[in-house]
Image 1 (cartoon, helix red, strand yellow):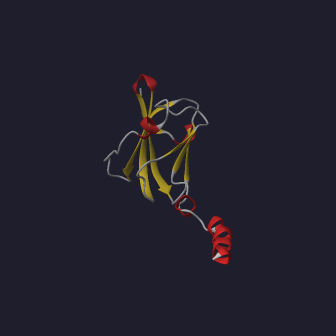
Image 2 (cartoon, rainbow, N blue to C red):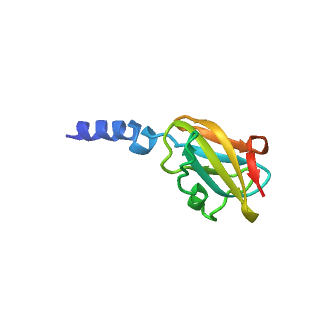
Image 3 (cartoon, rainbow, N blue to C red):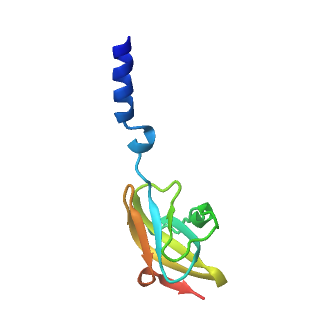
Length: 115
């Protein structure tokens, strides 16, 4: 009995837990020079925008050089709608999102900006 307990005490901590088995998920890294107030994804070319991911941040926006875990985003090709204060919006086309990827968005990636 003592041997079984000792073996269990040694083996269990070495086994990966569910958190270790899963990756970090898809994350966004704001490398633009402004604070994002909105970040929405759509399957590439469809203009079917999903929820505003910046609302998942503690202060509801994403500062320059800040990262954010994106919720409910599966690997695939996406367009992104990026919003800033003052109603400025820009599109980033054809992002290749891979499992546990970090999506980097910089000023040079912003196209079709309004306002």
